[in-house]
Amino acid sequence: MRPTTGKRSTSTSGLRQRALGRAGEDLAAEFLQRQGMVIVERNFTCPRGEIDIIARDGDAIVFVEVKTRRNLALGSPLEAVTGAKLRRLRMLSGIWLRAQTEYYASIRIDALGIVMEPVPGFAHRRNVQVDS
Image: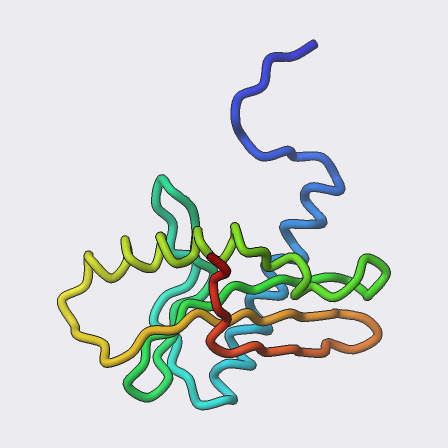
């Protein structure tokens, strides 16, 4: 048995999942831009985690969690945006905001679910609330 290194799996299914996630994030960025948002940063990463997309929507800064699925066989991708995930996003958004010099009048967390087949479909939930 090989020792684990903490790196992500390079199995075929792992590579396919990462490719699906990247494709979903590309589609998400295009979708958000069509909605009038300006992409500020993609894949913000720190030791505590990652934020998929950070965008400006008017005077608001928006932290977007993107979930992509090939089809609905496993349910809606938005079902994967759990309370724990939203709490982590709130913590990560605070880390990102503390590093900024610009002031943002409002802040929100959005979730964007994408189903790829038969054609890409989008479900955008604005201002997703964190359960206590």
